[in-house]
Length: 140
Ligand code: RTP
Ligand code: MG
Image (cartoon, rainbow, N blue to C red; front, side, top):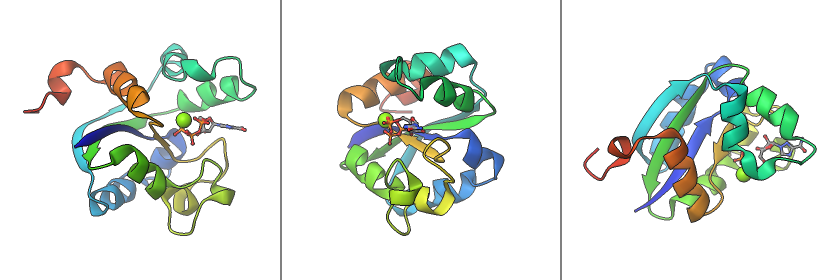
């Protein structure tokens, strides 16, 4: 079983789409291994997106991600990272396939409803960023 880090971003939480998104993920075979709702500080958002520091959208991204609460999940499934990215669709909802989460719930490339890890090393770093070891241990 592979793990990925999922975030329901502020835009989707504000619109009360959290439940629909989690239901869809469960339908797609993901197990919610750990979950929490938090309101990040700007510094916490910057730490999470450190790899994007210096890019043109970094300030806007970190302001957005610390605007209001997010729901963070560690998800498990076979081939979780690739499958999750398939289910959420392209970064820009305008390019996302019909029926994907971003096509259904996202308004723009900046406010695109969900985050997902892009590779195994990112998933490990991102899960450790938000969850203590005991929260994601095999018996959790
Ligand atoms: P994520 O990390 O949030 O799952 O999204 P992603 O892999 O599909 O996209 P990534 O390249 O990692 O970018 C991270 C987030 O930055 C925002 N972004 N804005 N205005 C822009 O051109 C732009 N480009 C990226 C998006 O919110 C994207 O999800
Ligand atoms: Mg990314």
